[in-house]
Image (cartoon, rainbow, N blue to C red; front, top):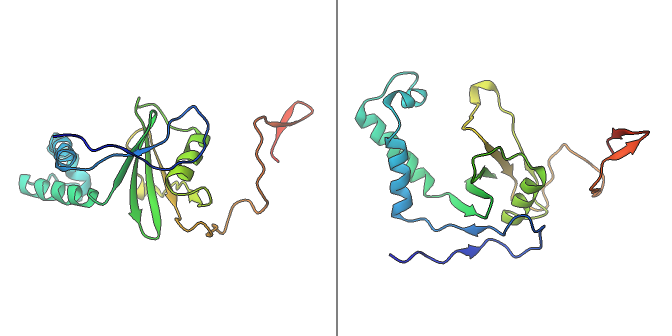
Length: 178
């Protein structure tokens, strides 16, 4: 089977430390790989999805198939540093960002670029620190929720125009916010 050519996600100038994203093709092989990863989990792993009880094999298989079908609507993008899973969660778009090397991905400028390249430079995104009861922590993933409407502004945040500097603002040797 010949792999599909990868398409550039966007043609926008960005800093050179990270390549442009390409959309990854989805096929039966990727769905089967997802099934295999879930099937390899021990039975007790699924307790979190079944109110604390270990589900039967049939229940696990049905759960896995629902997750695989749900993921068919996701788009995946990759560059030299990150893989991004994009899920439409109306009215927002959920971006799940992971580094290829498994390290933490806390570079704010990279996340700004990912949002701008994949969704749009004038779209706004937020990171959510959820209630403990809704916490998802799958190690070194970063999640953004983006409003795809470029005119939408969240009812919080900065109200002034763009202000970007490469060096911290200092006053008498102390760093100060703008």
